[in-house]
Structures are given as C-alpha cells and as structure tokens.
Amino acid sequence: MKPGRGIIVVLSLDPTVGHEQKGVRPCVEVSASEVLAEQRYPLVCVVPITGTPGEGALYPPLKPGASGLGKPSFALIDQLRSVDKRRITRFLGRVSAEELKSIDEGLRLYLGLDSV
Image (cartoon, rainbow, N blue to C red):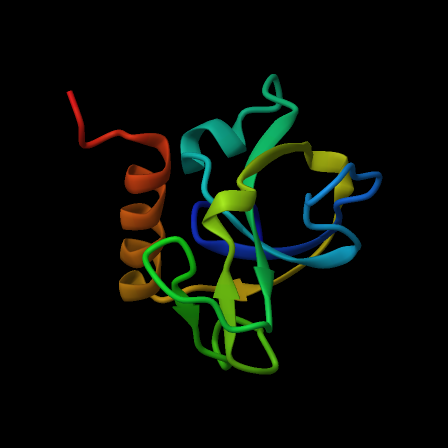
C-alpha cells in the first residue's frame, strides 16, 4: 500500500507536550494524495485515532475491518498535525468514503474553512 488520503498508518507521535496525543498509534492521512506522492514534500498531515469514544463533529467514528482497525475507533480532529513521513512504520488500510467525508467535515469545522 502506498501513501494516500484516507489511508490509515501507524506511527509514533512522541515526543509530545501537554495534552497532545502520544505514543505509537494509528492515524489517518489527510494530506492531498498528490502531495503525499511527491518526494520533495517530507511531511504528511495526519489525524490520530483513539479507541476512546468522543462526541461531536471533531470525533467521527471509524469502523474496524477494511480500515485495518481492530475495534471501533474515533478520529481526533483536534489533534491534527504534520509529521515527517519517516515516522510511518506501516500501513493498515483505508477509511470508507463516508468516514473520510465525516473527517473532512470535522476538519472544515476545526479549521474554520466554511466561514468567510
């Protein structure tokens, strides 16, 4: 599997500070696939995933299965971050189109992209 928008990867988020999500964990790649494919761009934007339930648009649910996740999980939109591609240790799977749409809605809300 190669990098791409909606792909779930495993990577280390350490070191962290304060309330940042930490540890080795799955994350959803949210950078544009065209950017991810370019060698000259060493960073990838990811949204960490947790098994702890969250409520609202900033914590969309993700199903196990084709995603590679072993249990129901939640994307942590408010933990959005850019990481070096070298942090990626493996690829798990891909979120569904519906799940990626929910992640995009959360990103628009979090980043204020719908307001002018």
